Length: 81
Image (cartoon, rainbow, N blue to C red):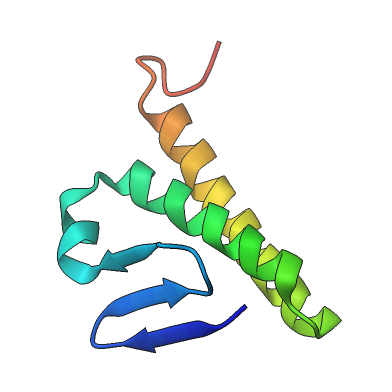
């Protein structure tokens, strides 16, 4: 898999994924963090170096926590029973 980042664009390997900065602005923040979590998990899975894989997995878990916190704070009782 090849990763190329240039001019505000991210292209991953052979997939057709290209998400530009302007497209990211159009997404709501939860969608952005879901997108980032998924990409970090993908990068973790293909990383050849275990330390790099762990970094990507840590980032994915941080994005997941942001998503979870956002879901809790958007409930009428702020996630409390």
